[in-house]
Length: 254
Image (cartoon, rainbow, N blue to C red; front, side, top):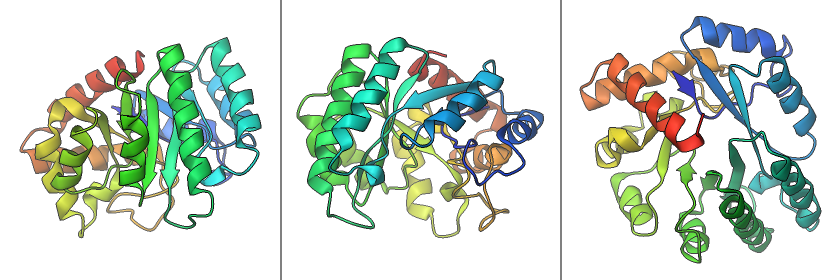
């Protein structure tokens, strides 16, 4: 299994990211992709990646909730790092209007810039979209048809899948939310999405799957997500693992 979105480098893991990665590997996770958050998290993310380069990959970008008036400076620094190579994606980036709409216009500008960078470097984009689907699709429709896209932490209903596919044909990252009791619309969406467009992720340390909901999440819990996806689609866990691993390898060129 490949965890295509995890933040094991954050302070939420005082025992150290290497120990958490080790537990994930013991649980059957073969590879982990770690997207960046902002300039303050680059150091810890890169240290963990350099310590475990065979089982981890990294993505670089400015998280939308961290976008402020000085976003161009930060994204410029990140573009320099991306130019140097060693990253499998631009991310996580996008638009988040859940908490605050103050910087909505700047988030859209920053998202456009990230898409431009990804297009130039032929890298996929890991999209964070929260309470902002119309705005996100508006920016994508402006000129990112060739960029490989991943809607990370997708929790939408079938009609959301249809709206997205009117603009682009992305991969959909499915995490612990799929195990929640109230996530029936998302589970219904899995059939609409299709196994060939699914990725598995944990988004650790957030959104731990049942039976660990409410606790700190970690990549070792990915099998719970895989099992629930398999049950929903009427497949075996092995079939889902094989298909989603293939999707991740193709999307991120692992």
